[in-house]
Image 1: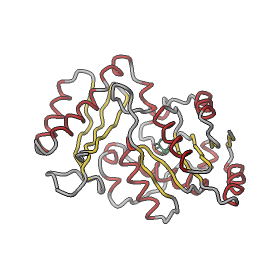
Image 2: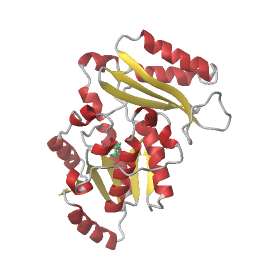
Image 3: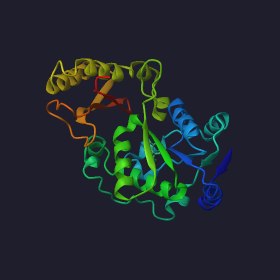
Length: 283
Ligand code: PAF
């Protein structure tokens, strides 16, 4: 496995790949890799000639300094995990390599997608994501790039980013990878206390009940039911729950036939913020 820290060295290597007309599959990550990342990487390996994984904890997408400081960085473990699955290339730039002297995000318009859900609670987050993903796409020029559906809003925003900026890459969203008890895999799960880890599957259990009752109960009833369930919960604090249209991410008041709907949730388990979502399509 090749490990690059410098953009120029990676670019040199990728020129030889492109000259051979090989396809490049790209999985951008912030490290602290888990099975969810590995499943994205394996999918990339099956569908491309070369797979590039980036590990970069992007400072401009954190609206909370403490979350950035405490973000897990098990670099050696990550490299070992990537070697074990025969990943071809890992790109691990420093902050200076990406941002030079100015650690600032560019301001983007994603046609309103950025104002929904996470956008309301994490100011500037999607400008940070847009900035780093655009920069990484410029460096890697991947054929295909893969993102998990746990960050469904991020996935839609990245599709919008490439559409608006004419970036020639195919974006593929992949299903959420879950722990056996249903908790969506996330690098932040390792920071949960034992108590919070034990109760965290309640989030997905609630989403599954919403799906079961979608169409039987109306949107208002389902939403108030979820808020009440979390009010009763001693350890989990609901930040938001909403049922939204999958393509524009706007909350819906009633079910619109022929449109795809999805339920989205953000919950604090102590200091750790967890997000999850579920498709409400019947299949
Ligand atoms: O989903 C993530 O891990 C990050 O937001 C991403 C896409 C790697 C950009 O930093």
